[in-house]
Structures are given as structure tokens and as C-alpha cells.
Image (cartoon, rainbow, N blue to C red):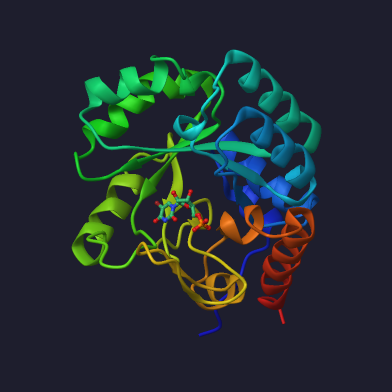
Amino acid sequence: EVKKVLTYVERAAQCTHPLSKRLFSIMQEKRTNLALSADVNTAAELIQMADSIGPYICVLKTHIDIIEDFSADLIQKLSSLAAKHNFIIFEDRKFADIGNTVKQQYGGGMYRISEWADIINAHAVPGPGIIQGLKEVGATKNRACLMLAQMSSKGTLAKDTYTAESVKMAEGNKDFVIGFICTEKLSSDPAMLHMTPGVQLSAGVDGLGQQYLTPQEVITNRESDVIIVGRGITQSANPMQAAKEYQEAGFLAYQALFN
Ligand code: 5BU
């Protein structure tokens, strides 16, 4: 049996959710499957990173709660840069509570995540109520969610049955869940996105449990769609050059799927 790999264009055509459709289109247009994990601690650094690395990425991933000087102005600038460089904003909030609580964490508080983050993610551990709660806030705004089906860290409990059940939960909510955070392809549905953190140009570990795979391993062997890179870019002497290298490595691996 010959396994047919679909192009980003073909995947986009299969998407019913506008955000996954848009993401696959951006990946094709900008020739990138790179997501930047912009784990910096000030608004100025985040803005600077988003503007300089913006041309090379399809997704900008934030941890908004590690910013020391958060303000509405930061969100406004970030949103303008997303429009300028055509990338999607993913707040890596990892919601993990009951539906009624995550609703408030997503829509309220000081960050008002639902007002600016195109994509958020959620742990499956509370059960499907977490998706219901998030959906009540996000669906009308055309937002989307990724299920945390696997993690990159050593000793993760998100494996085996847990992973399989997370995938089922995601697939039962395709009007809001557009894919997974995972370390390998988990769904044969071409509309489902697979995004993988723990990526550097050389495999290795970080001393606090993070485990790194190379872009080629992630795209070619694990058959994931998007590589998420943080320190490989942000801690590089030349982040822009590093971003270019990750973009190239990721996109070349994608193109090689068709050879
Ligand atoms: P790094 O600097 O490339 O190691 O950063 C990885 C980022 O991805 C960081 O923001 C983590 O919070 C995030 N992450 C991860 O590393 N592993 C996971 O399983 C998940 C998220 Br989920």
C-alpha cells in the first residue's frame, strides 16, 4: 500500500475550521512549518522577536504570564505584527481545569486571552467538559484549541491510553479542536494539525526534563506538521539567522515527503 502524503494546499482544502484552513494556507504561502516559542520576559523583547522573526514563521507561540510588563498595548502591537507578517498567535496556556473555571481563565482575568489568541491548548485530564467550557468562550470568536495529547518532557504521563483518549476527545469536537500538541502523528484526519515542541537542530536534553528532536526527525519520521522552537532560536547569538535555518530545515523535510 502506497501512503499518499497530502500537500498543505490539499490539507487546507480538507479543513472545515477557518483557522486550520488559514494555517495550512500560511504554511504554503510563506513556505514554513516553523512556530516560534517566544519565551521572553518583557513586552519589548516579545515585540522585537515577533517583528524580526515574523517573516519566517506560521505561528507565534506565547506564554503571556511570563511577561513582566504586560499591558493592552502589548496585545495591540502583537496583533498588528500578526497582520503585518501573516502569522497565527497561539497562547500556550495549557488549560487544565473544569469547564466553568477555564471559561473564566480564557475570557477574563487580566490577560483576556480569548480576545487576542487565535489558538489555545488544553489538557485532556479533566475530561470533555474542559473543551465545552473553552468552546463557550472561543467558538463565537472563531478561535480554536489544540489538545495536549503528548508532551516532550522526560517521564510524561501523557502516553498510551491517555494519548489515545485525548485524540478521541479532540476528534469528537472538531468544531473547536483543530489538532494536537504531540511528538508524533496521531490522527489520520488530514484536517487535524500536529504541532511538536522540543525541537532543536541537534537532539539532546536541557537539564530540566526537556527532550529535543531534530526538525527532520519530527517532520519526516514522526510525521508531525509544525515544529515549535524556543531556545534554539531565542538563545541563539543570531535569532534571525537561526529562525531561517529552522524554517529551511523544516520546509525541506516537508518537501522531501514527496520524493
Ligand atoms: P524550548 O526552548 O524550545 O525548549 O521551548 C519549548 C516550548 O514549548 C516552551 O514554551 C514549553 O513551554 C513548550 N512545551 C514544551 O516544551 N513541551 C511540551 O510538551 C509542551 C509545551 Br505541551
